[in-house]
Image 1 (cartoon, rainbow, N blue to C red):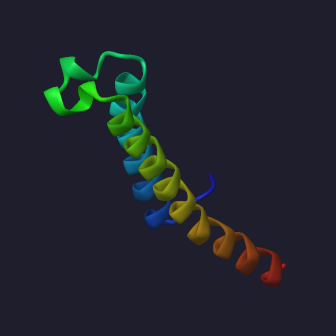
Image 2 (image 1 turned 90 degrees about the horizontal axis):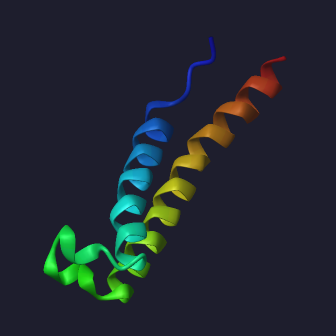
Length: 72
């Protein structure tokens, strides 16, 4: 079984959790979560933050893969 770096797992999980309210807000259901999320721009901010978190989580994964290929 492949082991993933803990930073990859945690940042990707946070990115997914951040994308959920963003998608709900962009779909028009943000006010069900919080009145501030009724604005679609709040949903866009959540989506951009989710992309940044997932991208930040990808760096440790790439570094781990590079280390594995160097050892092989």
